[in-house]
Length: 450
Image (spheres, helix red, strand yellow):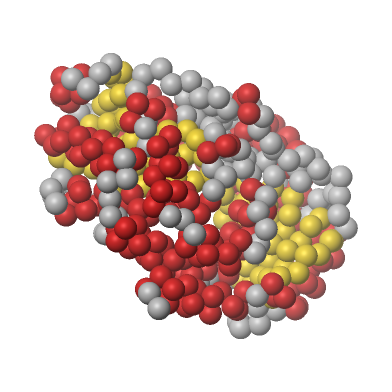
């Protein structure tokens, strides 16, 4: 039995706790519920999935701001009252907004689930988004955005999204931009909450023992969610055609002592259908110390401490990116190494052993994604969102096993074509003369992406 087969067996054993008979689908007055039975601990995790996100914003960042301000006050309670209530029960709440959907997370002790959800439902039903609290949050958001100059990697990620996804609805960060913050109004946030409550399709995912189902009446009677909420964001293909004009971009950061490199592109719907292939390609490129780019850039040449690579999709679009950082004087060398490495991959110039190492590493690490119930619920949410059956979680290792070298090469040819990739360098303006040698160069300031 080879390494991959051994890991595959361990994988099946590790996920056996999440057998299909532990997942139930319920209907609470028109609101769909997925329950993952877990009797191991007296705790619960609950996630509300809303089938719309930042693409609904009239002003970028509205949806993200609305979710962030939910606990800042209602007509009955101020922020301190709400915070004290949730802290008393040891409750954790958070939100996540993407372009296509939004999530609201709640977790705590099962014995406190009813009073907790009563408060959560009250927030969704009665949040006021007062002008004073909104002003305070705006000040915090502006401070964070202005301070991104101290986080070159985060700054680069924002710039690369805008440049590599130019011409699509997904180029603006879901959290919005600095220029949009002051345009968000309390009235717009109230309308946004009403829209999410009354119009947007929602689904509840919950893990815990049988007693978690006792909150059905709270959800049905107090959350203000109706069974008429049917809207699902589904972007038309004609809306997401990418228009790439310039391939090489320098985003200048004053006095930057190193440079961050981002290479990749937008993926359309037909390029994101093979989930296992995208995962394997990501791991093969930059999934760990033994990955192809890590070996070439760090191990053999010492140009960087780390390399990351990712190819993945949502429902209607996806992204491919490679990111690393290096000294300013070694930017061109690093780019050259990446270009040559990608060329070798599309020509099949790598060993079967390298592919097996990536496959084994991916299969071996996969079960650890689900160590926590929240991670497993997130995977169920993702599969529902992209329209894949839950059984694919268990079939994932088998899908990886069936991918041959020729399959990976054929898939990489369109994805890794150097001429179709956007290159973004985040560093000092002094790199301009070096980068001009690579072709037409567009220079912009980091401030353009705040």
